[in-house]
Structure formats: structure tokens, C-alpha cells
Length: 193
Image (tube, rainbow, N blue to C red; front, side, top):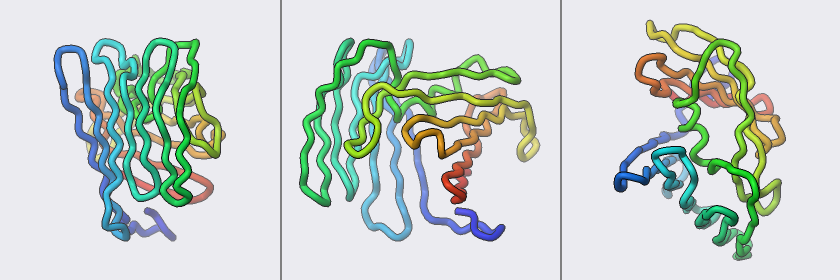
């Protein structure tokens, strides 16, 4: 986190990609915050050929969530651990979409060029906010350099937080790895590198 120009480490984010078979890719994100003994783990399975979502789970101290995706529905549950309220998820879907947890990885594979923009349909479930198929936006793409590497600087936002939070990805032009991400949400700035 950045505060008054100085960086303070608040945790580690580890994203692993694993081919489960010839068709499916597992994207597992583990967040270990310094002030919390328990890791947050999000797992998403997508089709390798087109990133079509198959499954998403999220387990942490705040919630447990599991969603299975098929052509026309997202089915699962969301358990709020604070209130012990369990919502059953049964959302009809009519448009093609990506899972909200996989679209940051998807950005690396887009045909990035300067001034590229896009609207991406994503599925997100949050019982207290918008849920279902909503949008993520690639707002701006620029060529730049970061630590001596040529990068695409990709600015994004989404409807999850009503376009109030902006993420900027620094993507190596050759390897397409994300080498830095900045999140600016309501004046709070977080950096992952």
C-alpha cells in the first residue's frame, strides 16, 4: 500500500496457473495479509480454448462461495460467515461472459495495441451489490517501459465497484506476464509487484 509517498507491505498475492487436462485451466489466487492468519483462496476453472468459466470458489474468513457455470446458468451458494446467512445462487445467463476472477488473467491475452478499448461481460456474485452478468472495461492501453522492459500499460475498471476503482496492469510485451498492478480505489492506492 502506498501512503504519503512511501510503500508499506500489507500482504502477498500469489496467482498460480495449472492445466488440469487438455481442456481446463485452474487459476488459483492466494492472498496472505500480514494482519490475518488465514489466507484467502480463490479458485477458478476456465476452458483453455476461450476462457469460458466452468467453476469459481472463494474461501476466506468473511465468506465461502462456490459457483458452477453452464451455458445458461450459474448455480451455487454464498455463505456470509459474519451473519451465517447462506444465499443459494441460481442466476440465469443469456449472454456469453467470463468469470470476474478470471478476467484479470484474460487481459494478458487480448490483442493489445495503443488506444485499444473493450467492454468485457463478466459474472460476479455479491449479495449486497450488483450481481450476475455485468461489465469490465479496458479504458486505455499505452506503450511504455518499466524497469527496462517494454510493457503495455492497461487501465481497467468494472461495474463491480460502479467504475469507482481503477486497476492498471503493466504487461510485458514479449512474455505477456503482469509485472506490476496498481489499484486506485477512492484515493487508496495499492501496488502489486
